[in-house]
Length: 221
Ligand code: ADP
Ligand code: AMP
Image 1 (tube, protein in one colour):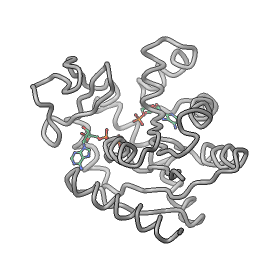
Image 2 (cartoon, protein in one colour; image 1 turned 135 degrees about the horizontal axis):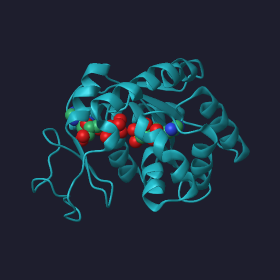
Image 3 (cartoon, protein in one colour; image 1 turned 120 degrees about the vertical axis):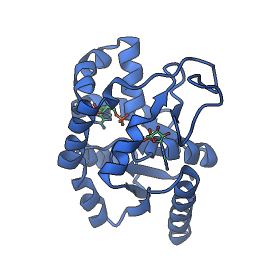
Image 4 (cartoon, protein in one colour; image 1 turned 45 degrees about the horizontal axis):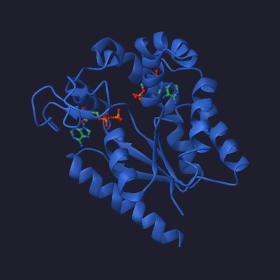
């Protein structure tokens, strides 16, 4: 049986980086609501049109827009196991997720909180670059591409996300502290929370994550 995991943590904590790797190692679907929304914006879909201005300003897209996107994945490629990255982000989304999973006779196995002081997360944004074609994420120092400014996978010129600008980051962090931080307590109360220290290099953090998830799996057997 595939695991059902949620990744929590401030923007820039490294959730996407770690989720891609753990998902490919364990055959799980990587469900990133940020990636889905960026793709919807790029394709000019209805959801994308609703989301664009909100994302550019650093706010949160309405709960129901995001929930619909997640449900679609739960009924397709994520039916057998997933990592939810960037969802839920509000208590309402967490409650909706619980109901949605219960309707499918499913439940979460664990919620991983990537703990990183906000000032360290902000340092990571400055160097983030991504491929507009395939979504691969790099960092100019911590994870540079093989060829300067070009994606390793398809050679596309890397870009800086518009919402990684210093002013928008301030709004995103404020949204995180106001609306998403309370979810740590929410999931702690449910006995689902696993804390992973995200302050370290990408390999170190992956080692801690893999260890924490494996221990939880062993405990459940
Ligand atoms: P999130 O999905 O939590 O917003 P990302 O996975 O996109 O975060 O990571 C943010 C930036 O930090 C990216 O440029 C990524 O390459 C880099 N990064 C991720 N993990 C680490 C780490 N452990 N140390 C240094 N940089 C990292
Ligand atoms: P991320 O890639 O996770 O940093 O998300 C980028 C942006 O997408 C956020 O700043 C929000 O505007 C939007 N977004 C992503 N996930 C959600 C969510 N679960 N709820 C609301 N908005 C979201």
